[in-house]
Amino acid sequence: SDIDKGTYPHYMLKEMDEQPAVVRRIMQQYENEAGDLTIDPTILQAIKEADRLYIIAAGTSYHAGLIGKQYFEKMAQIPVEVHISSEFGYNMPLLSKKPLFVFISQSGETADSRQVLVKVKEMGHKALTITNVPGSTLSREADYTLLLHAGPEIAVASTKAYVAQVAVLAITAAAVADQLTFDLKKELGIAANAIQSIIDRKEEFATVVEKFLATTRNAFFIGRGMDYFVSMEAALKLKEISYIQAEGFAGGELKHGTIALIEDGTPVIALATQKEVALNLRGNVKEVAARGAHTCIIAMEGMDEAGDTLTIPHVHPLLAPLAAVVPVQLISYYAALYRGCDVDKPRNLAKSVTVE
Ligand code: G6P
Image (cartoon, rainbow, N blue to C red):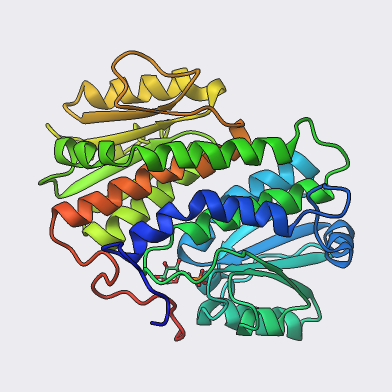
């Protein structure tokens, strides 16, 4: 590759470190002359004209899509469905009257997503692609493109592109919203600083790995609300590079079956960034601890308690995924290192999957 990893041992570490800068670059790229964050007026209009958005994506980009749905629905009151591209192509749901398709893809080349784009274009629908790669196939074949501006992502495990996707989705949803109850620009700046402060303490995460993931076969991530979606991404990250069997679960759903898997020493990592469900989540942590789980709580300032494993700085609840994903990326990274896995080139995986 022509991108140098410099003094970094791995691209993944370099790319995680770039995340605060990526958020700040996105803010610059999406700032208009008045200093407000916004998007191209043509795309704004296309979103406003739609009666429903259909987000189509795979892997990490799908997980960013789940967060994006929250943004469009909570900030702009636009209904959104999020679909895995390989399923959508062959099992299309009943569509609304005026759908807009939103493809999220770091590479812009994922075959499963391309196949859906071809189908929906044939049906006469409009599509927007959110991608890191200008001129990629998904960008060229869609009607509109929003770029991630994350810079080339080389490590197979996506980190900075996920953060960029979440940030661009937040800006897009805010741009179509009639009014916002918070200052997105200010809050994104706070989120970038929060990411930086977590990155600056990265050694702490190696300790978490030694304590919780050194020899385990499996692990659970749990969260509620926004934290549930981040838990799914956390599990994917851990599986991809450390080969630990992991699952991201909604805190309250664990007891409906999956809790049967909890044994003495099973690691359960809980994310607590959402105030209105923080107590319920802590209840879920107690449930698994009572069955022998080895529990690790990552809590946001303001809802942290004595005995929590890690505290992350306070950010706006909707932007919490930007901060909450960083500890779990770092945990996955150190788990892979600790267990002697090839961080940047995990077995069986490709950076972009261009076959169905
Ligand atoms: C591959 C990669 C994943 C990625 C997914 C979607 O499976 O290994 O890390 O999330 O493709 O890629 P895309 O480029 O469409 O975001």
